[in-house]
Image (cartoon, rainbow, N blue to C red; front, side):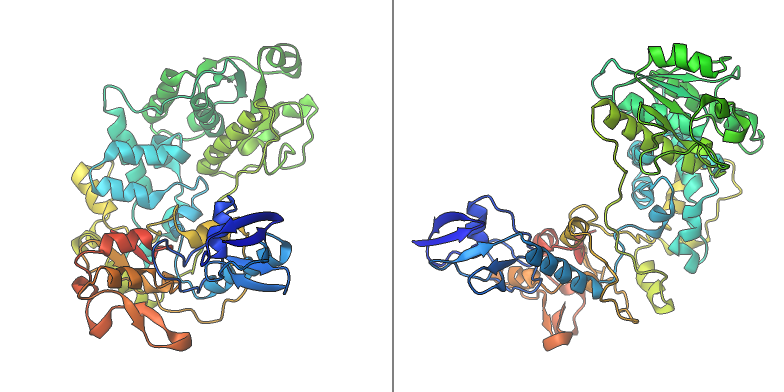
Length: 520
């Protein structure tokens, strides 16, 4: 047996055990990307770095055999800095988007590519659920959103953007045709009530997500009908009142209560509203058109002064969202803020310090080069779909919606939640451009295989797929091409990926630590 010390704890392991496995026996987690259980080691990512305190040297723990007297540190500043550096070096050679440009340009961060794929497959209820994860009012926004997502759509480099807003509206309309439109399951009721002052897009959105979290919600409005600026400032020809009424009625069915014809004064707020509720959200729309100046909250020429990360107005449970903070004109931004504030209110009422809603690390490489457009067109379900333009149509048939959704180029990664490069880049808060050179590699998408797609510019050359192919004795599997600095993983003998792998395609896709090899 071998006795060593890891993070000041002694452990005995069998001779030949790697430091990585010795640490795991202690319950110490060391990040890995190029290591795969049961396969030979090809330490290349250098993410599993640890320090030998006797020599001060850093070693990849997957390749370092445990020795008697080893004294190993796995998580000091030098080790963490080395891991971060390794990730930044890997990213310097990485060409791929974690999230599609359409999604990152959407103020609500809606998963647009996933919605498109579900529509193509005819899974409309699931498509609506994807929309409603981030957008509580898809029918309303389907009419009035200025669609920053469409301006970012890479399809514009081929012909014209996918009609994302129209598709969002389509799934909402299809849902409302059902006898029981979809509503998410609520968390257990917690018997706490929130007052939401204002029934515009921010207030309605905030109520939707608070109801989902198990809270009771009462929305106040000085007008005889709910909707705020959506009802009283937007003409019918742009936003039909039936659409507004339909989504408000759905919210009411979900449990929202409305107290209309009720003007909230400072005295009423302090004596009545504060006494009845556990937290309060100000969503009254344009600050300068409200009476909030008299409430004593800090404000400037734009609107209420709030904690920009949490939406808190003060430290006593008052929050704000939407145009009352600053007039932005885009309802989708107010809807996104409504959700963010709902999460802050939930944290506050759980006794936690409200925290900023953060997004996961996102790799992005910018505009496609002309020669790369054809690589992305390989993802198009039908080339005939490129002539489909539906902006002028009042409503869509299912067939037309599916054709339009099929125009999506699938710019997002197929492994956004399991890609280790993304997960660890987020954990280590890397600078993705630290080692970037002026010229990036050209994107390639090898998609002829019936089960998998291979994107070489996302590969970290871990050799896992090569070892799997060899172990199963594939007649033709992934292999190393070239040598030294220019080595890459590819298909041998100038063959197509369609000729690759009879047995192990799915196994390779699941084992690949990035989105380089993924299932279609």
